[in-house]
Length: 409
Image (cartoon, rainbow, N blue to C red; front, side, top):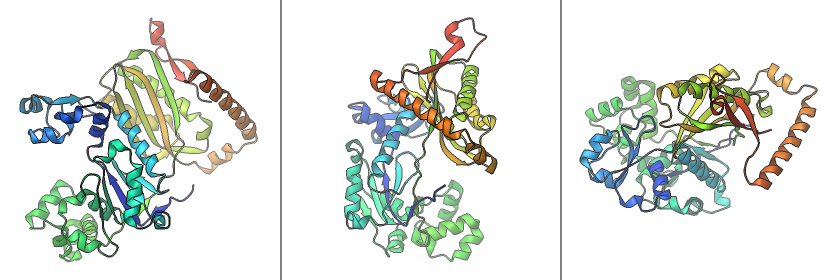
């Protein structure tokens, strides 16, 4: 596999409350009301809260009954994680038009490597302007931008900027810039944050003024890293992503399904089909995503990075089944989609079998099928090729026994 491209100079693109902003973009006038997005794992608690709702006293993590009691005008929104993931993927794609080195963080947070871009766009303010232009107009009202050496400095700069503006930290000025920032910008857990405040340490400058050895003895290796970040000693580079070609297997039910057992059975079918895909030969699955379209609108999504890449169906299915058991979709599922989004090289034996004598013949057949499928899609404007598979053979209802799975040669 090719080595990931990196960049020591970074621009941070941050859209706070990204999921809520996506909802405001597709529901006209929603931004003028106090709103809250429900949690993805339970509909009884709030996930993201608008500024108007915060002013009314509503906070993330509150139960719905508590929030309504505080703000009777609060508008509650069912989460649609697939919609948010698609919008974020569009954002990353737009940023990749500016730089080939783009690294994604949580939803709404991305880093753009800017090494060498000065020869194309000019100084940092011009690079920032190009990044701002790449962001869609709907996101420009809330996007915050920062530029500096390393991801941490760029992130702190973005967190200090105003909407649709940028904070640029000149090279060599990292320590001076960081000194006045609060310790809350560090990746702290609540216990370390509390202990630092008890010691009277409230800024990065105060933390950096303490000897590194003293912080290390008090907080261990994690404390050493925090000290080095506060002192500007660490400049973590942006690591570009190698754009994967996901393997997708989808299944559409004749009637919406709410039974967990049937969803688990369907998941096994999808994994089996995806593992047989020709592009998977010689590779182990490293990242997997499962999403569901829910009857009446909305969606459900879970993604997992496998600790040990594998081609074993049971190991791939385990985290997905756990999520289905603990936090199932909130409604009946109309369509279930499985994606293998990242891969790791297989063993020597797997690579050897991937180059057997019949590989060329199979590849030719595959290209012919793909060409025919593309022509059909172009003529009918939608995917119309399916396999009919058994998912609940014991059912008396024919529409329960079978489902349609997308045919993708």
